Length: 125
Length: 125
Image (cartoon, rainbow over all chains, first blue to last red; front, side, top):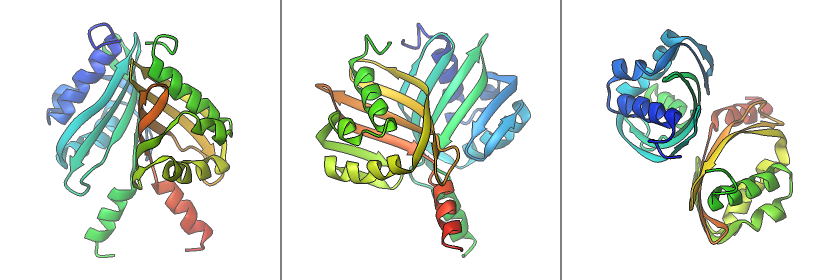
């Protein structure tokens, strides 16, 4: 399904464009108040917890590009690459559930290892 | 596109079912000789290098389930969760390019951090 024919993909990409465009207030308009996010660091519940996890990432984001995106009525699947200050290539994948135009569930996969290594290097370990 | 209408998804899921079913010989029948794989550990070129990377993972795999899968004529996007001996939940996402029924490019995203932590714990660090 293309973005035009998949309501879930349309919302997922609107959210994606907002956060990769450094407009997190706009990104949050696509997030349900009771969103559940399954992240590498664990399960997050509610919009505030989600914002606390995801917004700081946008502060270190310097570039991004979409690798692939698909969706149907209620589910979207998105893969992208990002360039960040500590890590040159940090790709991610998200599976998003969309209900009434907002994201109610988001599973995100990315590799924490290079971020942990960069942090240790910065700490002089 | 459903599996029936997406040639790429059909091949991607046949590959997925083979490796999650512990039949790596069968999995390799869906892999192009000159496959390029972009993995967290770096770029791998050729079927032998790919097998050397992916097959050992199937030896520690104890369970898996598909989270979402989409595709079109030439591209498939798949997300799944796996249970492994060292890591209880190790989800992954793959973007696969399929040409003439075989996978020519595979980008895989997963979190290396819990595997590194498990290895360190096993080493008594």
